[in-house]
Image (cartoon, rainbow, N blue to C red; front, side, top):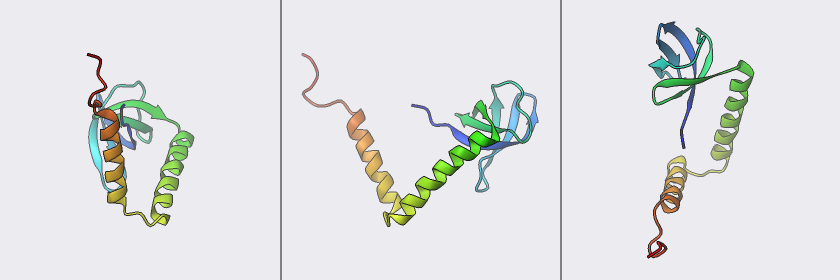
Length: 103
């Protein structure tokens, strides 16, 4: 599973781009797709731009994220305990089950 982070290109310089990820987080990343320009919305994975998005697609993704955050806030669930429960479930599902391996 890969986690891509969405951002907007502020500047390009050859194989590098400066990307604004929001919340004051601005990073230099490598460009691996063609025709990346200032103002483009991009997906970054492991410090590399892996795809571009149209403004419409970016806003659609942002709206889904916003909706999820609002639901979490309205549920009165502490975000850190919620994330810990998710981590725990993931760890359980990813760890090998004891006694289930073929012998």
